Length: 195
Image (cartoon, rainbow, N blue to C red; front, side, top):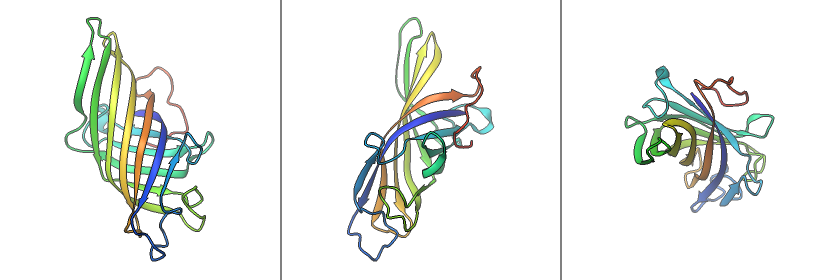
């Protein structure tokens, strides 16, 4: 199992939205980022099914906003499961001493999302929910002396809002840094989504 910190941006795209779709985000089009403070960063957890390790088919991932005190108060994404292909290696480099990296692309299936209606995209009258349509993680695993020492990931998600046919979400820019994984000598830190 592993935990990661997320730095992200959400993009909402609306096509021909109208008052007929009262559960659509408002303003109807927008870009929200951790860098400008319009959205809170987050934390993610990947559950290793059967203890077999990262990137395996069936492993699940959950991510939630983290404001430094509370988990999941602004947004949540959960229920994504690695597809039958698992993590697919796309490139690698190692020197003779075992220093280098391996890149992977991992596609997940399923999933749901929730956004608080009190965020910059809402007017406080209700929360927003939807279904994840596509979820992919591009990860680089860094090695020193043939031992994995870190992982950085870029995550891309698209989804559609419940009850808002012409509105979609893109989790367009993200970076996740490995914080902890099973086997580390330190205890698992608190404040992360459950496995």
